[in-house]
Length: 195
Ligand code: SF4
Image (cartoon, rainbow, N blue to C red; front, side, top):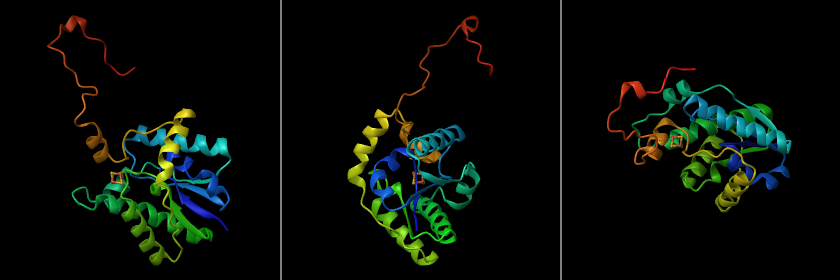
């Protein structure tokens, strides 16, 4: 019997990895909340790299889920993140039921940036609805060691939670890629056509 672990990203999976192996870890990548496409590919690639290196059994949903996310999550809702957690945990629980797994859990319980108590409550509600136990862990103390280990391995580390709304919140008050020129001479312009 396996423990099906929804993996939000490679870095968070690194935190509890050793303990999870003893419980029959199968890691499930299902994250339609990651935008845009290239960011989704980066995180999926990091997850696959880690899984290959560590010999982790995986189930991977490689489909870019922007449409599904926008159809499910109300961007205006104060509880947008709760809807996002529910979307991912519901799919995880349903997969666990089909596979006959012992229980399911999520590496969202590692991050200090997530709403930990909401993740826990949603996990328990989904467990009741689907009929597969939710294995709750408080892994927040593992966030920093996971971050350091990801850095040591040169594993891709994302700069924002995932959705386009969180990307905006992350960068809106920064000067990243802001052009501060004072006008230009067209003869000096670089050729910016796609290569
Ligand atoms: S901020 Fe993160 S948890 Fe909240 S909706 Fe966006 S991707 Fe989901």
